[in-house]
Structures are given as structure tokens and as C-alpha cells.
Length: 338
Ligand code: 5GP
Ligand code: MN
View 1: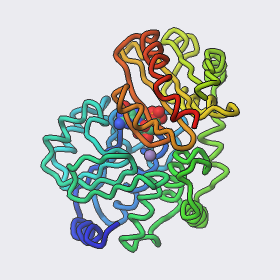
View 2: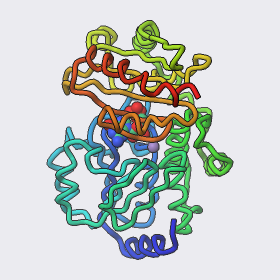
View 3: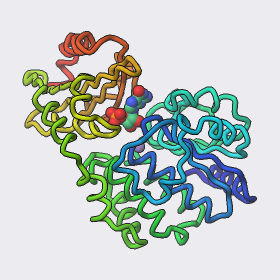
């Protein structure tokens, strides 16, 4: 963070404030971990803090310390709107454009509070008084650690805060293996373990909590996999029927897209997931190396994200969406095979 940003934040936080923290729709480990980690920290500085999520998040995050106090915008709509309207200060974490919060967008646009953004996605919007944006960061959780450090707050990191931040760094780095993982990331994580994060337990809670039906659903996704060896691409899909047959619940498909990338020589992996409630196809894109799935998702599927992990959506049906994708691939031949 810049010195001027640190000074501005210190000034905002010099008196007890009514603070709201908001994360993106379909919150993941980094959103929940950074949101709750920052909430615990700010509460220790005597602020009144609420974390609002736009909608439900996966079961494998329900153990994260402070989980019970999260306000769900869909289920507690009046309360959420009231909190946003009366907030002095709003932190937006792990996203950089109001549209990423779904139906909350209009409430955020109307809010009179000043905003502070902490985020590691590309192309931040300019709604915040303090924009701490760094696309080189492994995770928003690593940035919240930096933020706390900038406020001379590291001694305040207790087991709860450490567990929250560890969770998001772990999930956003694919368990410390993605290219965004640096020696600094490992140093931060080491400090979080020293401060009480129970690393083995956190890995088990997040990754070893599968239901039988989720594993069966993974089987379907693997069975649906198509590999284009020439273009080093693997893609798969799950229809709403397939999801229903395996008692799909939020978060069940998390990580499925990564299996395509474990194939030797494949550098681009995609999963298309039908959502008949919202009448869209949700798409996840992953890559290894220089091929930017952020640019691909932005250009063709109304999405975005990071160079190696991005999301998008399509209003066409499942088959049409996949056909469109397959037809686009040849024009990327040079980038995919260089
Ligand atoms: P996932 O595929 O896990 O949903 O998302 C991968 C990454 O892309 C995440 O960092 C997420 O924030 C971002 N992302 C997912 N969906 C969208 C989208 O519709 N628009 C934008 N701009 N980013 C997205
Ligand atoms: Mn993130």
C-alpha cells in the first residue's frame, strides 16, 4: 500500500465506525476468509462491523470462525439494505466492480459511505476512496494481512484471524501451487501458523469434507470431458439434470475445472455448468502459462478474473454455449500451441 493510502485508512479508522464489509456473489474461500478475517480485526479496534454476502456460500466454509454472524443479502434483505444505508465506511473485498455483487449493486451505488477496496483482480473500477489493488497478489487474504501489517496491527492477529486468512490463501493458490504463490506468500502463511492457524485441520475441513454424491458428480464431469490435443484444451460440462440427480448443493462443483489441467500437455481447461434457476450457463476457465483466460472470458463470455483463472456466463443454452466455445478455439491456435 502507498503511504498516502495508509494515512487515509488510519484517519478513517481513528474513531469507532459503523463498518460494512461486502464480498462478491457466490463467495469462495478467499472472499469468506478475507471478509471474516478483516471483520475480526476491525472489531478488535472497537468498530461495529458486519460482513454481508450477496448469496449463499459452500458448506465446506461453514466452519470458518465467525461464520454464524455473516449476513446473507438474499435471506436478510431488509437488514442488509439498512446496514449498507447507515454504514460510515464500506470495505469491498475480492472484487472490483459493483456488478460482481449481483442484486446488491444498486444498494452499493446508492450508499453514502466511503469505500475502501482490497482486491487482486484485473481492471479495478474507481468507486473507492482507497483502492488497494494488486493483481500480482495470490489472494485478497494475503492483501488483508498486508493491510493489517500497514496499520501496525500484526500483534492483533489471533487464532481466529489467522485461520480465516490461511483459508483464503490456501484456496486461492490451489494449496500453494499456482504461479501467484511467492516466497512472501509462504512467509505470511508461516506467520499465520505461528499465530494459531491449524493448517492440517483447515485443509481437512475444506478439502476432505466431500459427500458421496459430490464424488459421483465429479465422476460425471470427468466422463463428460472432451480433449482437443492439437489445441491443448480440455472442456467439460454439467447439465442441470446431472446436477439434480446428484443432489447438487452450493460449492459441489468447486475445483472440477482443474482436473482438465492435470492432463499432460493441456494448458486450457473449461467447465460449463447449466443453471436453470438463473437461466444461464456459468463458465469457469483455467490456464497454465501465458494464455490469458481473463482476456478470453472478457472478450467472449461476459466475464473476467485473473490471467490463469477466470469466470464468465452465457445466456445461450448449454449446447449452443459449448458450440460457440469450440468454434472460437481455432483462432487462438497460435497462443495455445506456442
Ligand atoms: P470461478 O471460475 O471460480 O467462478 O472464478 C474464477 C475467477 O474469476 C475468480 O477470481 C472470480 O472472481 C472471477 N470470476 C468468476 N466469474 C466472473 C464473472 O462473471 N465476471 C468477472 N469479472 N470475474 C469472474
Ligand atoms: Mn480471490
